[in-house]
Length: 206
Ligand SMILES: C[S@@+](CC[C@H](N)C(=O)[O-])C[C@H]1O[C@@H](n2cnc3c(N)ncnc32)[C@H](O)[C@@H]1O
Image (cartoon, rainbow, N blue to C red; front, top):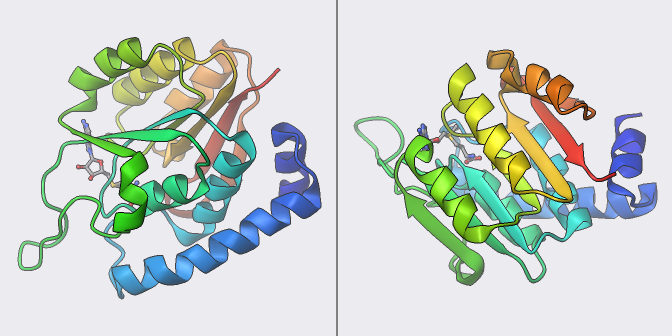
């Protein structure tokens, strides 16, 4: 049912969507090897296939994300991009437990890094400037600071710079910002997962 909704929203056939999901499962095998048995606040595995399938179907020229952490969402976006570039903003502090710290984006394979620009700093200070410079984006993922004010700020900025595209929000159930935002811009809110704070999509495709 969910796949049918997603296939309609993205304008790809159900069989194509299933191919994308199967590709994502293969990529996840390598991601899981890199992560070991640590979770490190990475995007939940149920959400990874939706993220990959969405970017694959959308074929954005410019994608932006906030919140890199170990780099799981980054790896799935980069793997799905054809000719596009991904800009990621993260505070850039090392990640994980005090005794065992990881570099930001440590799971991202080197072979994908030529289409990746990592910007270190606070999205509250850097996102507006980046989007003004890029002018137009086609994909945005929020997975950084999940406060109401920041989610609302990021979604507003991303939407302003999108003619046609998709916004995805991890942990959208942590506050009301995503639901309120989708109502205000009169767009669908497609809830893809309720795991670990949920995962939702706001399409701007019509
Ligand atoms: C949940 S993790 C991201 C997980 C990642 N998307 C993945 O799938 O592997 C959250 C990340 O957001 C970053 N972050 C938190 N607040 C931020 C802010 N204000 N600006 C930029 N990055 C922020 C943290 O440094 C952390 O790396």
